[in-house]
Amino acid sequence: METIEMLINDLESEILKAKNAAFSRTDIIVNKAVILDILSRIRSGYPIALKEAAQIRKDRDEIIHKAETYANETMDNAEAQAREMISANEITRRAQEAAQQIQDEAARHYEKMDFDARALAFNLIDGVEQSMKQALVQIKDRKDKLRYE
Image (cartoon, rainbow, N blue to C red; front, side, top):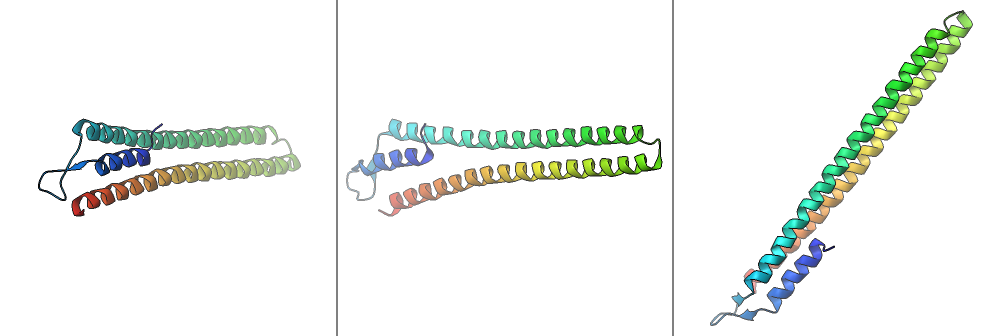
């Protein structure tokens, strides 16, 4: 799979091997079809990164939904167990403690899954952003080289 870096290198190679235009030290003659093909391949690489970011967000939402479902089921189970144990004071006290422990565990589990999902999504999107920034800096550098050489 071609990376943006590889495509930029191809573009740079085409520019460096181009011949000077007549009566100019800065203008060059390049193969239009080759340059347009490389640029097209660069453009096609960006949507992949965006699709990956969307998939990461979808996965995060699914993890959050699963955590909420798990927490709700756990809460429902705890409430059902508590209602069944209301026959005496001691049993009621124990049921309330157990229900609270289950609720606390479910809340901790939900918070951990939510934090992990957000951290994963942030890190992946941040990586994509950094790659895009680097690619844009390299493109600008190449443009500046072309403009001032």
